[in-house]
Length: 270
Image 1 (cartoon, one colour):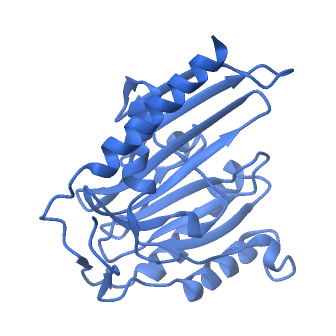
Image 2: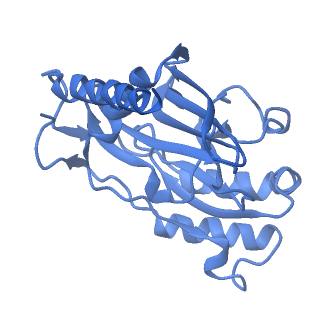
């Protein structure tokens, strides 16, 4: 009976994948994406934010931030600042900040306390855990161009995975949970004892979860790789305190890879 259950589960996942892969891509998804010009002075705005709000950042992350990079996640021409904490688990927590009307807002954080520390006008309930700037992928999916990330973390008894898509709303980045999977394991045998899924925030099953994830995991990747800097790249240069963090931000601005003019995929989505 157990073997039959395993085969039925595998069959369900396979059927979900076939349904997704066989779906026709809409004809109105462009093969290129053009970006507007970046907001004037965006670099200075982020530098001023880090300098002026350093005490808040230091209180939220007393061990310091582990990495800083800039990525235009909502494809509006002006990049967001992604700051990794140093992490005590399998994946680092990504804190994401965006610029609106000359002011920097926190739009996503793994810390609940960020809502009380920053202006929470645009703070999303969707958080991101990953360990690399390159994990943020620019793809042309069946639903159009977007950045997305496979956010995941876990312990020896639990694990979760979430496909997060980055949209724009009123000129500000808006992370969206596309699909989410949570598993609990028996600590001795490692067998899954509980599982739950959501798709677009609503309860779902494993097949629906996999079908939603396949839209992104199977999409054509633009080949764009975001860059940033990490604390452990140079502990002497990125010393503790305001000056060290500002140096990290300045180096991240230098490392920033803009999506210039247009990005073209090798071929359209099949």
